[in-house]
Image (cartoon, rainbow, N blue to C red; front, side, top):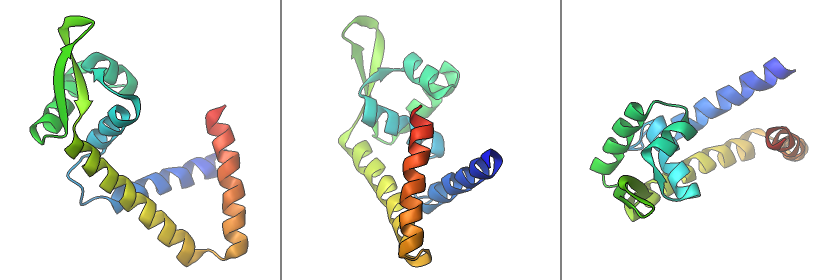
Length: 135
């Protein structure tokens, strides 16, 4: 069951990513933008640790986001030698569009493919999976 669940979740994630494929963002850019949107301003080093990438890779990702106007950098108030990255209003708007596309695809798929009994079973499964993830 664990292998089946892992496979299905992986396919779902790939499908959700492809539902917003026309986005201006790569998957890594979407992830960083979402982390900043949800967690607030952060340093390059802390983002690299959170995303499990090298600081050099994070600098490239942030540079691309900054060149598109989706993030800004400012001096770190706690340590002026560092900079803190924040999401811009435009970045929030783009991320909201990506999230909306994913939710729309999933809602349409559920409504179009599942009957009432299946939707209730899916709701129960979502709760169980949530418990596993939050443990």
